[in-house]
Length: 535
Image 1 (tube, rainbow, N blue to C red):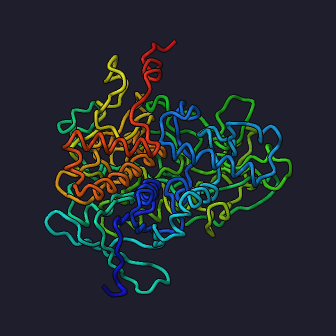
Image 2: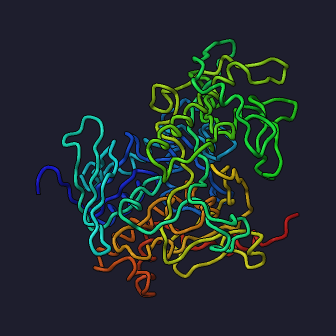
Image 3: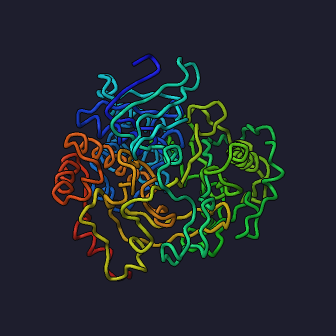
């Protein structure tokens, strides 16, 4: 084996949140893992994409997420307690919210999430049980007899050799777009299914594989009142200033956006908290709140991940590079245009226009331009699996008095509304109430491929179901389940399909999961709670 080849038990392509946890789970079972990542930060939506964790109302009770995710949350809080000059009240607050953002009970800086994840991985990386190849992307997959034999990766930047062949027993796809699926010829779906295929009330009449959810290129900003940090006018500003979505009478750069509680209506927003009853966006994703510090070391910092910079003018997945690259750049241009609009033209409640004190904070995100290292990608290619999760499995309205759908082969649990951001073709958007849900093992088992597993937002589910399975704790859980499944299959010389088809092996694999802190079913008290009539 020459210098162009690396070998491990498990190859994880993509250091997303799911990919990172897949590597950690496999390493905990004594396996040697190679983990690749296109940027220089592991952790995907929590870190390089700069999205604070979206969670559910039971999370602070330690219910509804893997034990390692609960541990992560407490480690984040301890990091702030140990390293930041917190007030006594903040120090003793067991549910400390570092940024006091209202999108999350734990709005915090992406760099802190990165530090905590690296701490959780440290012993395995330092002992070389996990090898991380940063700035690395897959370019070719060698397949024989429904088995991946190797993955060739391009090691960007200053690595030599540039192309490296990775050989393993199992290959896990932890990429945000399901990159291994087309490269390996794995059966998959993308975009919107047809109602005739899924029998989902909210599905399209005709399938469209390119009608995927919008992406968002997040930015970090602070606000220095009286300052002027106006950026150069973005190249596409005039275009975005006039761009009006099909579902709105207002341009995308306005204070009017779809109401999450009723996506058929528009709601008015503004920048800063006020006494006029207009919802402010500044504290929505605020991740630094110096009011809980004893020293004035920083201004407040907030993340721009709003309806105003959801990019739905074109797809980036499943299209040629000559379409993908301009769309990625336009998503960046939209966010820069939002910043410029905020600085120069955004209507203020006092009748004025613009907040020139808005300042891009690249140091928060580890970039020079103030934008995240990668766009937040809400939707992936999805395997065709032994079981496909649909709207019928999760929707509160459709399940009615049946309550939570339980699976004998559950590998984890989660809860979030079926939340679809505007899609790039039909601009559909909805927010469907859900019941808490479980993750069936069948959704992780490809219909044909024997040694490829999904470890991210690429399990077997419909686009609509993916609206709730894409959030942080669930992606984390999927990654862990995939990592443990690869380990179990190797330890017992079985394929994942053979595990799935044996009730005995499913049960023993589930024991491995529960030993690792994974919760397989929702407690009865939660089911009783969600079945109670709303007052």
